[in-house]
Amino acid sequence: MLLKNFSGFKLEAGTDEAGRGCLSGPVVAAAVILPENFSHPLLNDSKQLTEKQRLELKPYIEDNAISYGVCFVHNEEVDKVNVLQASIIGMHRSIKALTKQPEFIIVDGNKFTTYENIPHKTIVKGDAKYQSIAAASVLAKTYRDEFMKKIHSEYPNYNWEKNKGYPTKEHREAIKQYGITPYHRKSFKLLPDPVLFDFE
Image (cartoon, rainbow, N blue to C red; front, side):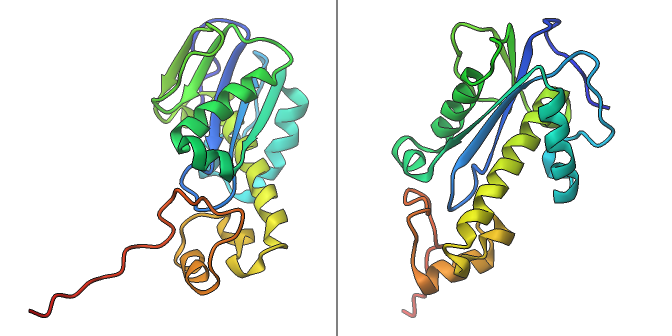
């Protein structure tokens, strides 16, 4: 059972991101402020849900949230600042996109920098503990998946429609065969090191 609130403040925002471990595409962050009476039987950490369940939740969260914001940090910026900074930048921008300024921010994970002097708390596995972080994880994941499906049509060889840019064997084989695209993160290790045999 997910908890509704950490701080006791009415305008508490939960924030999370999707796509940190991917080889291609953006990091997508979301921030959500939920009303006290918010409830949905499916709501959970987005990784525990099927794609169908996430897509069912997305409009429900958007229609019932007090406010939500979603931000894309594209691969060029990820390469410039590193993926951890990109995640924090994305979360800050998604909080900035909220129509109401939160009184408190709860963050999935253990890394964050203060935003606008608003008090915050980082919570490891927060997306499986608090409703607003779970809702943010669902929005971040669904928006990112939608983007990856869109760019799949430009570069179908990489099958982003299915692997969403994660380092699957199939994705790496495609990089080996076809090279990289403008959507790949050049600062990431896109292919494993070749195995070197010493015969001496």
